[in-house]
Amino acid sequence: MRLTAKEIAEATGGKLRGPAGAVADSYAIDTRRLDAGGCFFALVGDRDGNDFVEDAWTRGATVAVVSRPPKRVPAGRAVVRVPDSLVALEALGRHARHRLPASTVVGITGSAGKTATKDLLAAALGATHRVHASPASFNNEAGVPLTLLAADEDTEVVVTEMGARFAGNIAELCAIAQPQVGVITHIGMAHAGLLGGREGIARVKGELLESLDRDGTAILDAGDPFSPALAARTRARVLTVSAGNGPGADIRAVDVELDDELRPRFQLVTPWGRTRVCLAVRGERQAVNAAMAAAAALELGAPLEQVAEGLSHAVTAAWRMDVTRTVEGITVVNDAYNASPTSMAAALRSFRHLAEGKRRIAVLGEMLELGDHARAEHQKIGRLAVASQVDVVIAVGNGARPIADGARWAANGGAQVIEVDDADRAVMAVAALAGPGDAVLVKASRAVGLERVAEALTESVGA
Image (cartoon, rainbow, N blue to C red; front, side, top):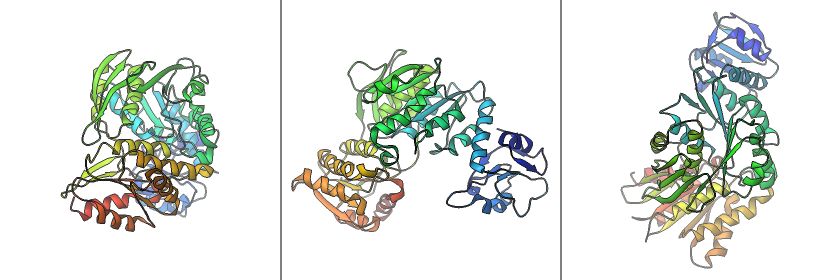
């Protein structure tokens, strides 16, 4: 979206210095992601973005939104000074939404599966609609406005993730994006320590549905016990989705099977007809995510067969059930992008489909932001790992010790349980155990950094 410095100043209530006609056609809060001709928002957080304005000029920024004046402003460049750059970015996001009156905005939230569902929906609509989807996991107070600003004015559908860290968070994002379709993938325990358990999470996620008007559509997981209460909170039409052969949902993924790389295959059954779907993304849970994406795409007018074709080509972010087979015949599953109890359980249930007759080794790290629920939820994962026929559980770091406790209790001397202090020792433990035909799963919250384990394993064995 192209905006002049004058438009940016007027939308944000900022004080303009420099040429009013300076034009920005892209927007960033990190100078490393700034394109020439872009607008840089100097946010203040762990680091002060005002310290990087000089770098923004070097990289070709035409406009900078700042909360303190920079040392210099090159000729032809403009500065918009505001009290708070994040508040200004949110205001400019609302302005961008008003510049997209013909666009339908789809908001996607939930405890797991937001990014995958967003990517699947963008692919499902790609052949029939002009679509813009949020990059990576742009799902917060900065990411949602940046998603809207990156949309061309002829965009027909904007797909944006919405994350939450506190009560009212989703409502604030909805006030910016004004979604007409709301998708809640699942109510789990991600961020339970911040939001107050599943009940608190459901309250916050439900803010998305409360923002929808009577002409909108809400899409929910029929198998989630919180869905009936969530449905009661919206005026919008409600569509339910499920995976499995049981009746009751409006859109169903039935006869779900995983191939030898954990890619789901299933029949998609909908009010618009039924068709075969073969996904490129991996993991059993992706069948539900794809069915949710299909529900939104079909509701927006995309033909069923083109939806199925689009879903088959969808890809999502790295380190999400990435499967690599080494020359020694070891299968490494890198699912270390992030972890919650829901996504950890989904990964383990899919992992059991690999290494039939050989060993399954799960390298598991801490799931963060669970608060008082942390110990119990980690113990559950340890027990589930054993129930999912994992032969060796390697718990990495002090925060993952309850995983080891749960696994020992469930294994009763069966599965081997190993505790290590860090990723390097996890690599050594796996290298001493894994052989041809074995499979290794690596998963933890993103801040734990266990992707290093998967990368070291594939590099060390010559993958």
